[in-house]
Image 1 (cartoon, rainbow over the protein chains, first blue to last red):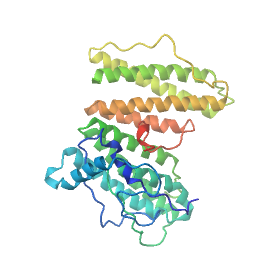
Image 2: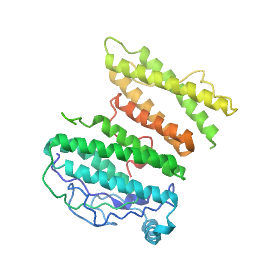
Image 3: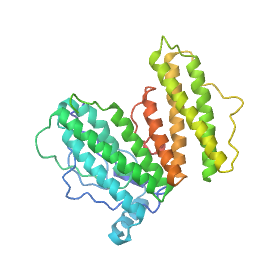
Image 4: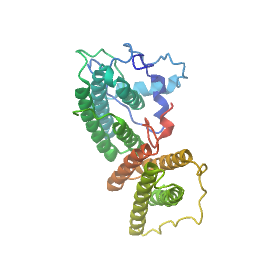
Length: 194
Length: 144
């Protein structure tokens, strides 16, 4: 049912990667961005969930949040910089996907990518925004073309970041995310003129 | 694990993949199941090439490439088309997990090659009725 809003992300899961990605603190805060999508109503929660899924240890989550908040531009490690770049790419991709999702013809096709990227953001401990997308629904073919281009860019960013990451766990994660895009792009319709 | 050990583990996975894909291909009719046959053949050839590359790479590190096992357990369900698709998908997913581990344990050009392997494997999964995943090769992250 493409019109049905998707469940909001479960931000409490974010500490799942705390151990393998120790020291990895995403600092991108997507505040004020206009690239959210329209899948779910606007929320700003970072600790609650309506899914009923078990939340992670507040202690762990708080420690992560605290570390994130204390990280300044100058203190960012090379891996943090990589994560920030990836999160910026994910935010941009979600913006394009959110716009594309307005087109009913391709809503069902782009929704899995939106879900995947939201999960990617969660695991990287970024923050999701869901501000409504301005403007009318684009033509499906145009939207698909933009999605493909954006996803290819994001894939390149992920492959590059995976290759440069100092942390092996981060490299593995980013490479896996790139492989996810490879899969999603393979099944995305090409569109008549895309 | 050292890079050499990870490469050996990956080589062992390639040996198994070559064997199982060969077995699956031998049970598949080229005329009756052309799509599956073509996918199996492509996968077989890809993994055989990766195997040979790894053997050369390990030898170049003064290692002794791990030999193929004398026997491998045949996957279940080989008697039906659906079973062969499922076996191939399971095998490819296992390879993706191995490649992802290789990414995490290597650096430089070797890691770059591992990233390529992971992406290729993820794409190959789709030819065996796989569906896009959120974290190919890192399943433990998908359901959290």
